[in-house]
Amino acid sequence: MPLENERGPISTEWAQSRSARCANLAAQFAFEAITPATPLVLACQSFRTTYDTTLREVIAGAMVTTQCDRRTTPTQVGP
Image (cartoon, rainbow, N blue to C red; front, side, top):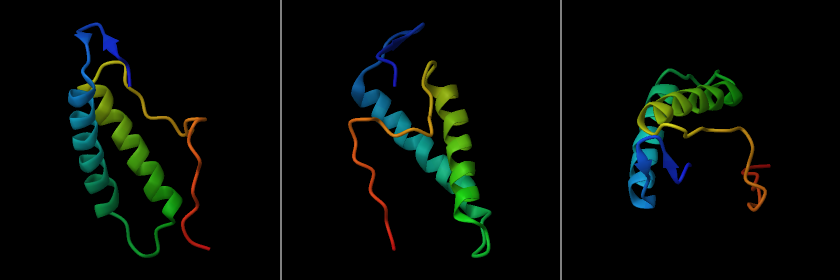
């Protein structure tokens, strides 16, 4: 998330709120169309693409990447 864009400084609280709204919208859009037969990877790709599109519309300069931040520890859920 950029700290500032062409519109000026971006507060952390504002960015978090808008990011959460965009994520919720992307989840609704991406996951309402899946079935039990849909590969999870396709659902996740749809979510990421939709989230990236909506986030860029709300916060200029923001982006959703497929890479985890190097400071995080990835966790696998399931077997």
